[in-house]
Length: 625
Image (cartoon, rainbow, N blue to C red; front, side, top):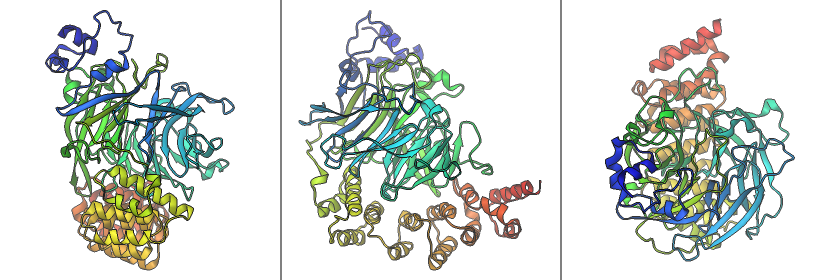
């Protein structure tokens, strides 16, 4: 195959022919007369993947064994649970009609990077778009619902029909639907929502006025308390959510900037439309000050050619994986990886602390596909540290509602070298063994172990000594991530008391102090003494990270407590240019202005952050009209 033919297959411009020639060595021969409307075989597609030296890829599964893989997760045995969305993009709107979306389980029994066993768990799904496993069953986003399918005996067969936990997501959203189910370090189940999904979410039968209103952003659901909450709003079409080592929520996004730090209570930039809170006035910008396409109309980035190739491939991103495994080289640890749909590659972002939050730094792309049909959707690492990546495999993208292929789909596995074989079933481990896994170099183990311990605590089967083991682990931890792991696990297992959290408010690590604030107000309850501690912390603590957690906490307090906590926070002139704090403080006090305008006027001389002074005055003027 010559270079000109290769460029034609890839739809590359001459401006990137040199890059194409470098990739050509890794691409197998493809028939000259192969029609453009026919996909490569799954094996051919796998062999076109180009990665840095030392990496290797395998075809884990491909059609006909898997098709339309819209979402996946890994269970406590390292098996893949894959959602096949045969419904997309023609969502079923008749609640009496049953779809044929499937949930498949794939297992690699000999650790060769290819599946050996495939099980159909469920084949009557409707509008499936996201999946998580835990608490004796499977959690699914199935527009307009959040579903739970029980499998308490773990025999890979449903114990009964799906239970509708929540409803009200908007079926008109089409490609902007609810997605991205991810277990948080605090024991909640988190998910994303798209900009066209003007949803009113609640338990079945909830009156309209009591439902949670949201469109684009992040929400969460508690698996034990069965509560749902809005977390943060904004972005456009988020299709990827993960937590970093310190528990910060990162989402990937399309069209506008691709990466946002979703602070609880925050409102980030959106592509269009009014934020559901009419007086936000300003929105928090992306933590990335660069684009993955060359600017102009986003439609022009399709194909990842020319200036878009150099910038990163295109505007459309899907999947978010912060790599915290132990197989890839250490330089990738803590970096975020996302599939660039138009650029047929995987982008990489690294992070540095910037004031109260994070700043993204563009790193080199780590994977390229020479398959014109490559449409990467999700990436996740498993127990051996290797990364699984799904490929929707199609000629179009999310805006194409007619020419969607129904019979294609691939899953690749990408490792650095050959990882050691791993056989694991964390459900069979003792509490003490699960506690020790909080130290594991691969965070996959710590996360799954924490959730299993939370399940046992909820079921009343947690061993009596487990809490003490976790307390010992917390006391002995010497690094901030280690302290947080023990702290989160204690909280999820009901072993972290208010007194513990009050003591942790003075911990030497800022994110530990911050998480103490967040967990203390997780139930929105606070005592007078605790409020006094937070007010003192707001005035004296030197860390902008801690002040950001306090600003976020304002929205979980009643009005009188907000006034008390806001005053010392607003006196920090050094926060005037911070990326997050001025707006987060405004979001916290905005409801107070209309409730008590006279008190707002009296507060103005104490406010040392110009933007907040401006917004207070602007809101007061609105009230006079």
